[in-house]
Amino acid sequence: SAVISQKPSRDICQRGTSLTIQCQVDSQVTMMFWYRQQPGQSLTLIATANQGSEATYESGFVIDKFPISRPNLTFSTLTVSNMSPEDSSIYLCSVEITDYEQYFGPGTRLTVT
Amino acid sequence: AQKVTQAQTEISVVEKEDVTLDCVYETRDTTYYLFWYKQPPSGELVFLIRRNSFDEQNEISGRYSWNFQKSTSSFNFTITASQVVDSAVYFCALSDEMNSGYSTLTFGKGTMLLVSP
Image 1 (tube, helix red, strand yellow):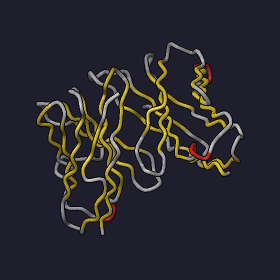
Image 2 (tube, rainbow over the protein chains, first blue to last red; image 1 turned 90 degrees about the vertical axis):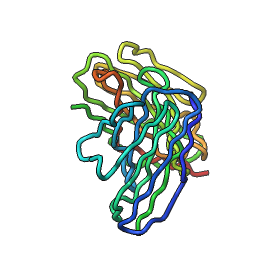
Image 3 (cartoon, rainbow over the protein chains, first blue to last red; image 1 turned 135 degrees about the vertical axis):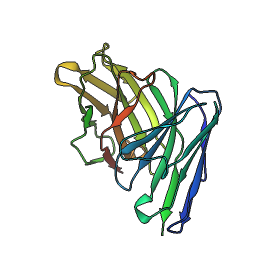
């Protein structure tokens, strides 16, 4: 497995502002993933981040709203831009340690007022 | 398109009861993996098991057991002698065939398990 940390663990933000979430893993990994979990809902993949290339976004998610950086093999950031109350969710990063096996970070609980 | 169905939204049991969480999936891939994750109230997602599409052997790990039946596209999860600490949301997930060089997960809606003393 892997030790994955996320910062911040939770935040309350004002509408219209942006928040950057950090994800750090204790080993080098090729792929990192960002998910959103809206209240009481399942997980939805936002994008996949490969080091050294642009992130690949899933349908319904765009780079302007959720820019992602992946500067090295152990770190990634997700920014939630121009936030609205509908962005209130848990945001989770995950890494693929072995083929087909993803481990998740503890999540960032975001509340937008 | 891939799909995972967890028909049970919420299950309530009393401690020491056995409980089975159902998972039915749809995929056109011949190679795929199935997963179960546990999400306690703290919010983190805990990996429980991975099963590939070619291995239909049932698996047991302590009080947990999994029944994979390809014929019915089901991957059910049983907790024996449930405990209060088992209270959580449980997600079943399906990976695709890594056509893009990596796998992506499709999650079911989750089943909330409440175990009361």
